[in-house]
Image (tube, rainbow, N blue to C red; front, side, top):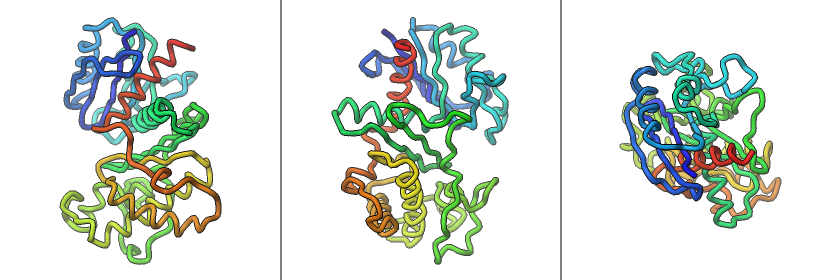
Length: 290
């Protein structure tokens, strides 16, 4: 059995071939340019292999409802030139295999869920957030992705403003000071005129941001009651999550039981940002079993 993965990011595409044990056998990476050029490179790559199914984890927004006339499209994305792109249609016109189409963060969530299962962790549900250029979230409940009208947009929830951050407008073009508008990577430039990698953890801005991220973890906890919450993306680090756990503990105030916070609020188990690739393999494999 050969499984395909497409991790379609706004900056780069990562295409991979794996086996039924989710081991990568071949992989390539190329920049995300125009839809025509990028998707042609994707098709050319998979034409080299007799894949049985492909999982796609794409930047969005995307249409995931199979009953929708524009199923398989990247829809109203701010990515220049990519709005209303028929991603799945262009791929399957040549590569005629079953395709599972979901968001990049759903793919990562599923990858982390599968790894927890393989490690025999007591995890039947999981929430995954990515904090980077944007903020997104995906949830797995009893092995199934959450969302039927569409995919979740957890990065655009409203959060209570930190008292030391009242004058920052936020950077989200739709909502200004939603979660993404307050904690995504571009907020460092907007607040401090420097990239996040140049801001030491001792800077008070990290305490402001941990307050917001802890609220996201609190919302996920109280709404979904997952077994685990995973934070990935370029902004996240173990040192930052220590601050998030600290603030989460205060906000939760022992209202409901959760596991030890070091086990409950974690970094990804899959290294090198490989969660989406493993998730794609697993979702493709699931298609063949349905």
